[in-house]
Image (cartoon, rainbow, N blue to C red; front, side, top):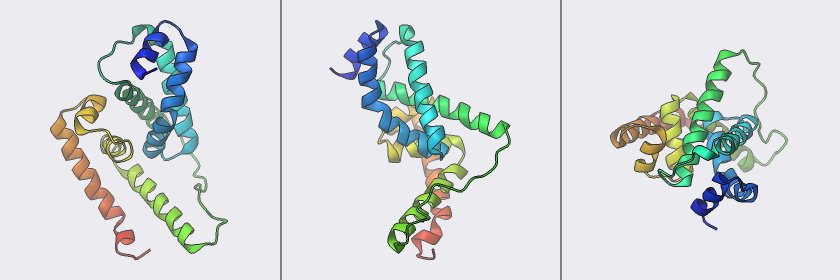
Length: 179
C-alpha cells in the first residue's frame, strides 16, 4: 500500500496503516531530527512527537503535497519547538557521543569529523540548518524544501549557499588536513 492510501486509512482511524507509515518514515525523520538537534535522544523524542501529532490531528489531514513533505514540515516545527525549549532552560554539557574507547586512528578521525560536522550544523541559524539537512541528508529538491519551510525558492537557494559557506569555514581544518 502506498503512502497516500495508507494515510487515507489512518484518517479513518486504522492503527495498522499508521504503523506502516511510522515504519516507512521513522529512520529518515530520525536522521533529519538528529542533524537539526545534534542529540540522539532529542531526535528520537522529536520523531515520536511528530508521529503523535500526525495521529492526533489525522481527522484534519488534507493532501496538499507528498506525505514525506508533510512529515518533514511537522518534524521541522517539532525541532524548532525543541530548540526554543532547550534555549530557555539551563543545561549542563555532557560528553559527546563519540568513539572514545576505540583506538583505531581512522575510525577515531571519522568520528571526530562527524562530530565537527554536527557542531558546524548546530552553529548555523535554524533556517539554514533545516535547508542543509533537507537538501543534503534527505534529498529534497529546493521546491519541496520551499514548501516545507514556507519560503520562496530563491530564499532556499540563498540560505543553502550561506550555510555551505559557513560549514566550509568551520570545517576548513579538516579539508586542509590540519586535524
